[in-house]
Length: 163
Length: 143
Image (cartoon, rainbow over all chains, first blue to last red; front, side):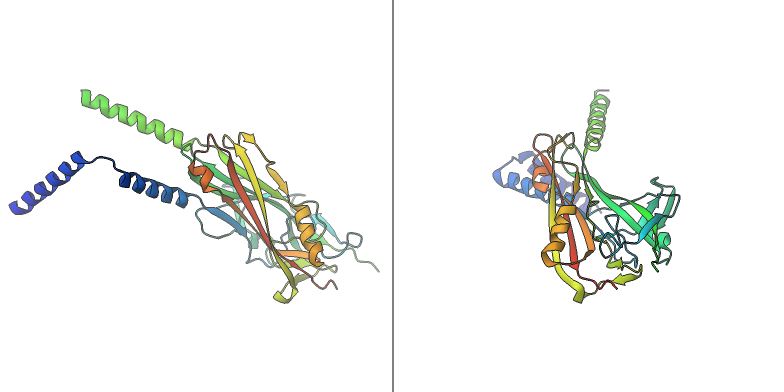
């Protein structure tokens, strides 16, 4: 037991002596530069918005129909005229499939996913889905958080039947 | 007593450092495409003129495209050097016209930050954020 304590003290003494003698040399500066750049490289990441598990059209513009603008069917707002929604996700370099949405533009209020919004109804479509990518930076210059916020309109299709 | 004072000073410095590190500003980039007539879908589905959902398959794909839009600002996002909201309608229309397709599917948008500028101090140098827009131009049967 006493041997162990002695060896510990010896070890501590050696470390302390080495620390006391420590002076910055070029190698150390290179090491610090390398480590810090690795940290910063790690902190710079990207966020991807992609939807792959939904079987309905979700469009960035206002038209989910093929064809020319003259014979295009009409779209009518369905849920209290225009129901805007927000989707916030995510972190790191991971690819994110955003299908979790926060409805009514308010966080922590109603959380549903697109599947729930569409609910297997082939008449429901999401239009004008615009994206806003935000990177929050700290004063030291690294990314604190990153977020994609999406806003869109949930609509139902209404076909003009021409006889 | 002196030791306590030194410890208190360290605590103050630590608190100020934490506060400063968390009060950085943000960079953001808005992507819209409101002026394009053809459907631009995030999924591989669009409606045909009858209102039926049709799925685009590999054989329908005419072209895969990548568009990059860069946003610049100084003093974080206090001074905007480029527009915050970017309308990509013209770029998308150009992609469709090039191969004579009738829709864009599998749209994917990635927001990336440039580490080089970030690393070199975001306060003095301009910051930049890139939006990478990917998708497939397709020609789908419209019956």
